[in-house]
Amino acid sequence: MYRLSLRIEGDITIEAFRDALGNFLHLLREVEESVAGERSVRWTLESLHHGSPALMTWKGTPKPQRKKKAQAVRPDYAPIVGKALLSGVRKLERGEGRPESFSDEALDATLNLARVKMRRGINTLTLIGEEENGAGTPPEEPNVLEVTERVAASVNEIIAPRYTAPGAVEGMLQAINSRGLLYFVIYDSIFGARVRCDIPPALKTRALAAFDERVLVTGMVARDIEGHPRYIKAQDIEPIKQEGLPQSIRGLDPDFTGGLSSAEYLKRAWSGTRNG
Image (cartoon, rainbow, N blue to C red):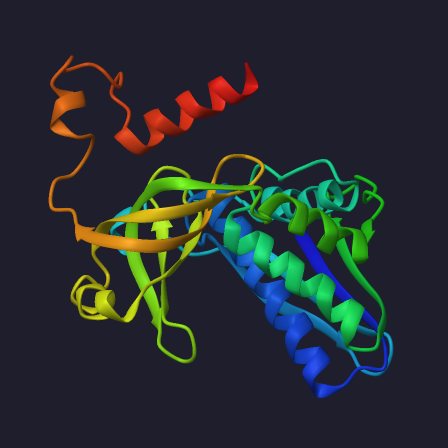
């Protein structure tokens, strides 16, 4: 059995407690989906210590399978998820780049968790992982990690725009905001990055009509250190009906992508170029 704890010490206001807990759980679920491909762990609150420090401990067990899959045995992903979360935050703590299992949403949750510690009067914010081995086997030492300001600095270094150039971003249009500056969010089809798109009022109607659809947005694109799009000042937006690669590319060779989806093929090709 695997246990994951969040310990908070300091001037714990209602807002600080809410933000720390909310961002921790958001991070946990994002890493779980990245590692397991779905939410396959049932995290239940095992203990709660009031006061300061406040200590909340959850135990992870496999979720029951659906009836149609009842014959299959669901793996116990709790230890894998917990260790991936802690190792990922530790990697950020050391300034070693993006953790493999951390999506943009996970990075945001980690950044916000660090900001709670920085801005909400919290003295220490600690993550603790403990794995309980089988009978007769001594338990492992708890994996204890304090979240510091270095985590926030590392995340900002990863996601901060580094250069801007004309270009385009393709993805699902979601989360339209009209309070203040008009913008919407799309999720890039290749890297899965969440990209903010500022749009002029003239494109508002077209954006609303394309909500929750796949679109191609052209304009000035700001990219991070890994080349992932982070922001675009949109000049045009067009819905995309055709799936996969453009016909002019796909027509070169039926086995051009080796059986991979176009997004996965381009992502691997880009990574190989960057690593080479």
